Length: 161
Image 1 (cartoon, rainbow, N blue to C red):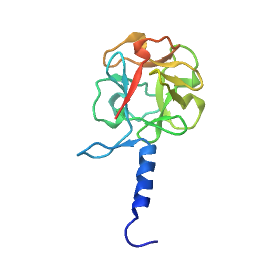
Image 2: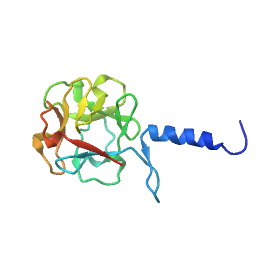
Image 3: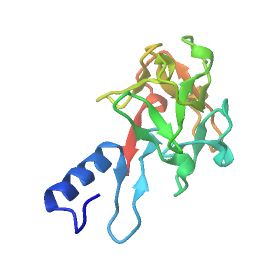
């Protein structure tokens, strides 16, 4: 054990690791983990309904708020984590149009790995399919599914601190 205060170099290294892990800070407020995933067509956020932590809960669009159920951390393993231990997951390791996008305990499998692409799409590593607001829906409660990428704005997403 050491005594005294950390050096500036040590503090900088710790801060760099926190930022790399997906933590963001805002001026005048408390640090918040992760980012919101905002639909290009709807302006709504990818949301875990009612703050559920139950495996198999399908994610949806909902008005963006300050809850941790809308805060996602993109990891070096290409996982999108919520609550620190649940991952965005292609249900049943699905690779077909209409596969539900759910949360599940993080396990490192390919159905929990995602590419965040420069064209605004988020694609499944295993399936190659896009995150999609079902039926081009924009209302609160619209379910998120996987669908063949087609350039639609219901498949466009931005990350917001």
